Length: 299
Image 1: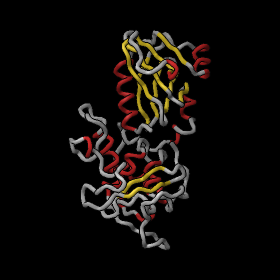
Image 2: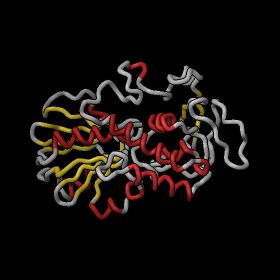
Image 3: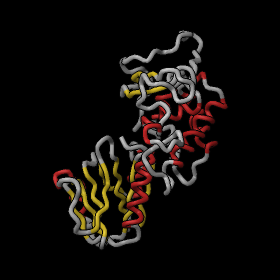
Image 4: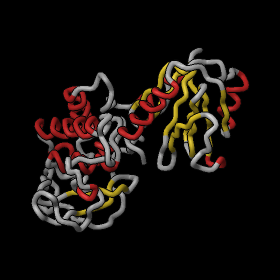
């Protein structure tokens, strides 16, 4: 699934190509969007701005119309010169927006909805998003306070689940969940109730640092958290089950976590286990297991 940095870059590219321009063509394979276009045509409107909000991409048109898209696992936005051949088959097209010389095409996007400002404010997911880690108004203190509040309300939630929950910090996905926990030295299966104020701040600090570093204009060669220029050494623990930790040499572990049974990676040495009262002093082992109990994650 694309994470907040992917969506931020997509929104930035869409803004550069379409921002401030009049729509000269609109096509969609989605009936709900077509009905809106029939009643209130998109052609002739201006693309006022495009921005990301967590894992959502929002395109604001003149006349109080907002296109909200979510990529889930399969979707993507592509930019073409108008008239150029698409790199993906037309049967994968969900909508295409043309503004003069440029055309933006959404392929395999599972969620695409038109909203007004009022309906967007009531959206079941968007309205409940936590602070956007890549938002212009985001601060580590704001993120730490949100995570602290969540920990107070759900002390038995696990760190990895909380980091992935968009109601806590918007924009983090499965890669950053594991990488941030590693960088902060926090075991991803620890209960939130075991975290110290310093650890809460460290988790948010690394979340902000990693996402911002990966959306810089000069960030190239794929997502990275290690600062290594070697493509094979870009990440600390994600996807490295059974391999040696780049810091200490211990073997990286992996276990399924949360209601979605998402894979979580960690180093058992660099991320020591801290049990809550009543918990086993033995840390979870790196085995395939069923979903753990806890609050449902909001995408």
